[in-house]
Length: 201
Image (tube, rainbow, N blue to C red; front, side, top):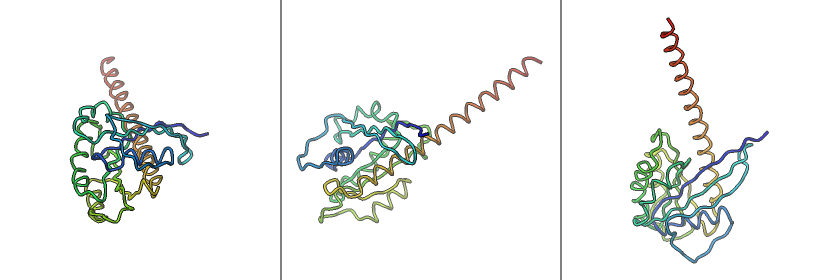
């Protein structure tokens, strides 16, 4: 018997790093050289089976420009895994990861910020004019406890692996959150039972 799960992934990062291209490549197996800035936010849904679970994945692609960041709180909440995207040919987009990481934690306000799952995607790895080294990116990920993937949305390299990694992290986070909630409920019931017993004496 397969259990069904719903997972929300969020792609954030500077404008032009390839968030929409990654999402389109993963969901529709398509790439276009035509660049159109995302207005506010966009999302796709995909159904797949992961580790004997039927999963419905909702992938949100957000605008990378400041004028749309006010939409953050509404969009970020309920996210099960956040994908931070940068362009390996753009040091600015890599340096902005700190800001996006902090912004997400403030806007999403997860219960356990230190345990929330993040995936970092170094996109456009097919381009020769690389300016951010793999080592640099991996060191950043180590400091922030994030998983790291190098991708090319254009060449469809490692895109499926990155999203699948994010989905697995999200499912694990779901499971741990559910266990924590269950434990808290049991503790609360135990406290109520003890309180009632004291009152009955």
